[in-house]
Length: 217
Image 1 (tube, rainbow, N blue to C red):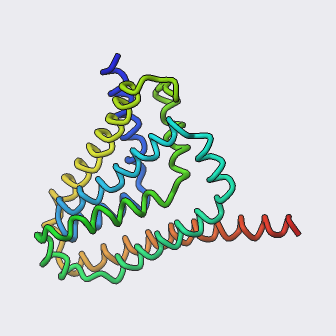
Image 2: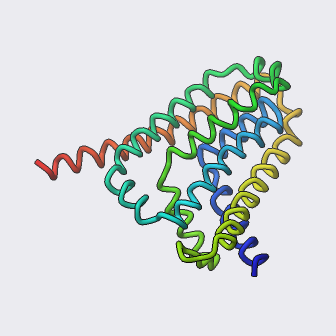
């Protein structure tokens, strides 16, 4: 039974991580520019946030849902600005300097925390977790035993971390084929993609805010 719950948790972690969004683009960009360690540690930041969302989905969905529904536009606006800001940073970053400092351990925390903040700024991911739980047949709630909940959440950690390890390893296998000029283009393209995703979220939030104000008037 415990093994089954663990496998289901792993599937949820994989399902939450595999779709290529701004996090995936950022992990790919960092792996190419700074190496496998940077990409994997960045991915662990996302895995940590995904696990928090999974815990919220299990333990306090109704409370989170009320907060999100009441402030969805602000979450979209704030998250959009954050994503666009990180995209601009990626766009303006110098791949040569990143390659020179790739071995500095002090950069690891920055890689981790920046992706964690970027991921945690989208609380709507809680509902994605809920949908994934239903899809794989996870049936836990506040009445479930602590051990079962812990096993499922540990599975989410393993599944998410496994995906980021695989992605960073795969990209790292080919990173040495890229020349400096190509790295510049990759930084620019990755930055533009992330900025666009952030702007979409920002405009969604602004449209929702203006629409609600219009109705209120």
